[in-house]
Amino acid sequence: MNDVTNTKLIAGNWKMNGLREDGAALARGLAQRALAAGGGGPGCALLICPPTTLLTTVGSVLTGSGIALGGQDCHAAPKGAYTGDISPEMLAMGCSHVILGHSERRHGHGEGDAAVREKVLGAWRAGLVAILCVGETQAQRQAGQAADIVAAQLAGSVPNGAAADNLVVAYEPIWAIGTGLTATLDDIATMHAAVRPRIPAGARILYGGSVNPQNAAGILGLAEVDGALVGGASLDAESFWTIARCCA
Ligand code: PEP
Image (cartoon, rainbow, N blue to C red):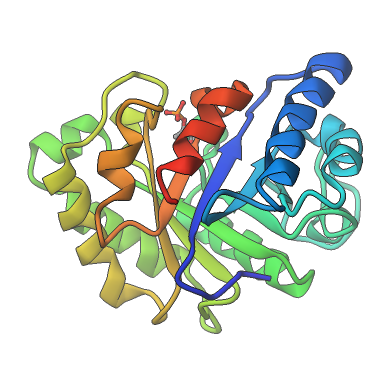
């Protein structure tokens, strides 16, 4: 479950990247660094969310390294006639976390807050920590609606029963994901401060959106930021580790 301490969490979202050899090599690069550092991250908790096809391979490489394993999405139901989907219980065979409501699911697959909320409940039923993604579009930010949009997403997708050990929120401005653009430190601090009273005390709030080795120290140095959800830069072991080291 969620490690409810003062440690930051650095989570890598590999998205639809990695085949058997390169996925295993990337995981090995991280496991070796973690073991050399005494297990886990350098002063932080580490989580890797590879594609479903690599969960077993990456999970076995990470065994004993102190790095946790997560899924990138799941269905709400425990089992059934849902071709192509994966249930929370299936993920829980090796994972501790699952990313839910990522903007690439909300926009690419039409998932709204109600569907995301059902998935969060499914994740909890299976004992998984839900990493719930929220964030505004560029047009919404320019219209001054960022805080309202994120508040509405939280209201619509966080079920009753949320606690610091079953929920992580990832604030990810959509216009910053995979674009090389990042929100300013002031904007990140402001948005995280706006999220804080809307979620259980102690639950982590991660920032996501083009976090890289160059900007990570500034972002992770903010008191309001409890970690990062990293996409592109998590596909390189040294880059991901350098980001994690900013927590040390
Ligand atoms: C993400 O996929 O959640 C993400 C933040 O991606 P990137 O770091 O590539 O912007």
